[in-house]
Image (cartoon, rainbow, N blue to C red; front, side, top):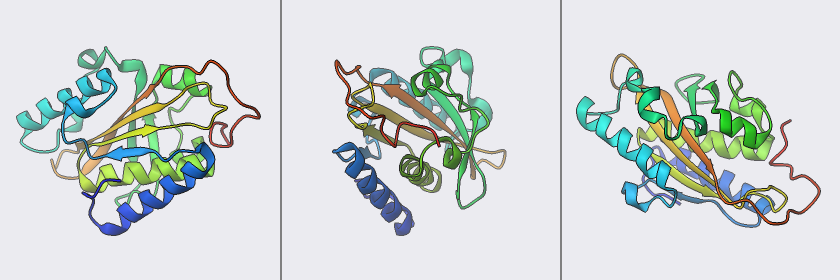
Length: 198
């Protein structure tokens, strides 16, 4: 678990949500605050991280939300979501835009939905806690999630990146790269509680 989160309660919430998710999946998510893009095991997410870092240098801080350029992200466009905090505390997040490939992998459309309503409670609580860390820490968060054995993918790779509003300091949007790992040769049954939408 990362040790780079303030306030501490947000870190504790993420740790608790990860432990609950691990009891369903059989393995705890791997979470890091991304010390460098080469540390990401998914190459396209490493490229996405480099893109964000270049904007941060140019903007001398958290990149402005208007700098999100679809053409520059065409290599990963269907696998990224744009989410917005519902309030300053980050009590929940709304999918302003859901990636088409992400929707295909999950089996439902995410655009316009709240994280709390799009997923079952265990998964929603973990994603909310992770987004909250990225939001309040104003920095990237990388997660390798091992899904329940009945999910057809061996892993989910997540990269969450903050963007600021016009004031240049308040995080107003988060770019969430979500890349599925290799498909499993066989899957368990029944369908996992963390995979099905409520």
